[in-house]
Image (cartoon, rainbow, N blue to C red):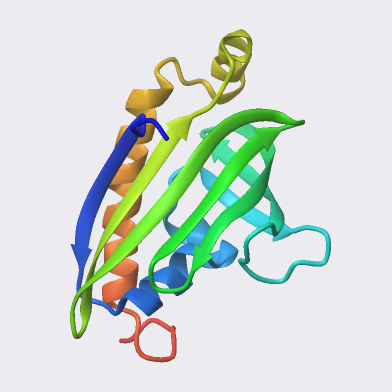
Length: 163
């Protein structure tokens, strides 16, 4: 696979399994991912597993769009990844790689690959209001990782925020 079009990483003072639980849970993901507003599992799926699909509802300002997402990697504590399509047209791939760095810490790298065919780029730019998807994704990833770090580091053993 070619190099991602955008990626960043951060150290998080939380167990890798807890971080994985956050990035692979659609409700939690909507709390820190910049454009992902909410998601709903499809075809009877109830959790992240390879091959599971969900409908992703995204937003940027007043703009809204939905995609179909297929989980490609679901390795608890290590990796969560998915491909995004719009009516069968490949849009992107997203991946969270998680590496344990100590008893209570990990390093998380979020990456994305732009998979859009050239003919759809003008339409996608109009729908999302983004001229440079690579630059926007770079900024979104940095913001998402900051929020993920904040969320994971304030989450207790039961997966709920601590006071």
